[in-house]
Length: 195
Image (tube, rainbow, N blue to C red; front, side, top):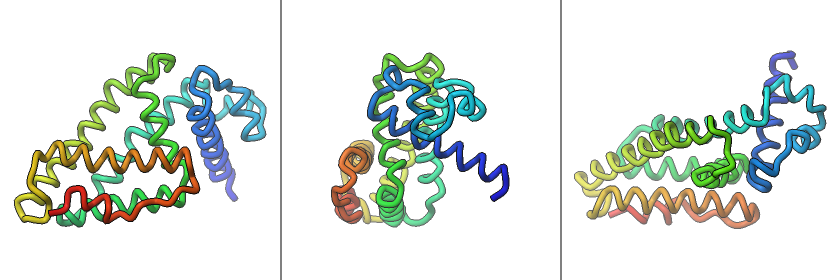
């Protein structure tokens, strides 16, 4: 393995460990020493990857903000196919990658976290609000198109988008906290909006 690949792998080990600790203990209770011990390195070496606990926390917030949005915006096709593909993809990731489920919990916690660093609060208010709004705008747009072609049920498009998205995120949070739980079938969630 090349040195750059090894460094990237180590960086993701740090990110994974810190996500787990931040979800379980919170930002204020997680010490940089806890993260270093979890990944088996010194605090000094960890600082070669992230200059502070705050910067590591910010990195996780950025992953949470932009990851889901970019995943959803890459999906093409008819509206009902979009929702089926999105749900299938997210649920497959929940099964394969505990990181994804924990990220949903992490982002939810940070909507109300008064102990978060100011830079994180700013990111959450500016970027997360904007990204979350863009996700809702995208979902509402797809629902309206699906209502026009008869594949998505009638009703307030925004309310349908909220019902769909909160079902998906609620399942992700549940899986993060109880990883051995079964994941519902994607069609059950898509049926929330299907005509």
